[in-house]
Length: 168
Image 1 (cartoon, rainbow, N blue to C red):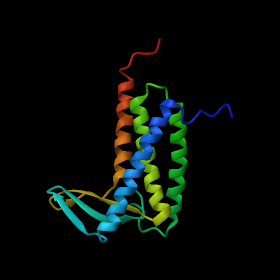
Image 2: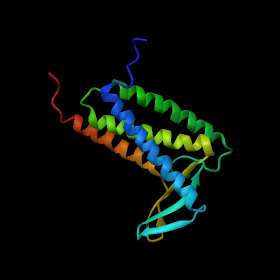
Image 3: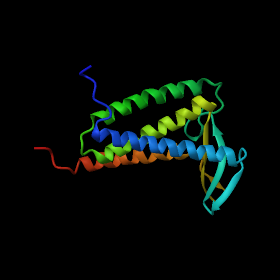
Image 4: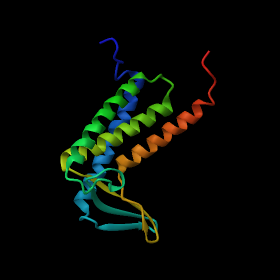
């Protein structure tokens, strides 16, 4: 299939390796939390940060967490489609698209890390919690952090692209 980009070329393999490392960290950290904390048990680390075990059957900020179960399969399928699209995008990147490559690799890792939980457990394990006094941000995990950082890097890359000189 000549229309398909070659995945795993020298430049793209580093982004897939970054994704694999982040997926590994995500799954390892969730395993530690499940082994070490009871549901909703919190460890107070800093005045603004806790480790707390929570399960999220929904999506971001627990949206759809009280749905009848369809969300597990729908969001897993959506994440799978997005992951394939991200791999194709990564394969088409030029050799100097470092910020964009890192951003896509982080988003890919986050999507895959959370879909592993959804398919294996039926929910996503969250455990990082930021708060200010009695105001608590919903718990999140390494995969969520990777998606957020990746999205921020994509935005930064888009902003910086406007400042780059046009290719000759």
